[in-house]
Length: 107
View (tube, rainbow, N blue to C red):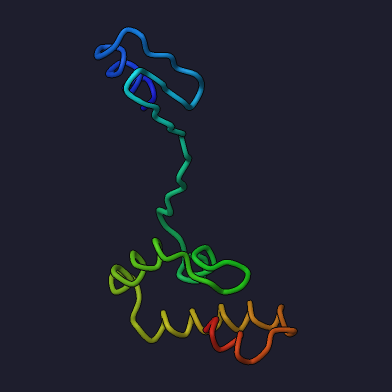
């Protein structure tokens, strides 16, 4: 947390200057920010797949690895693949102006 960073730095050097997300002392500068990360806890398979794909059908790679590592605890391979294919069928018709090459690349 930022208070931890400030406290540790203040203990090392009394001449620190802290401005928002930037901390500067005679040894250099440290930039930091707080980012909210939403964590998926539960959902139906359809909603999980929908959540993990954007409007172009691209998978969020971080969550994709988690899904493919854990899906066997709540579904089987065939159902997961069918759900992913159904999601792509829903997403891809929205962009009919894509060429076949782009469409194949997306899949």
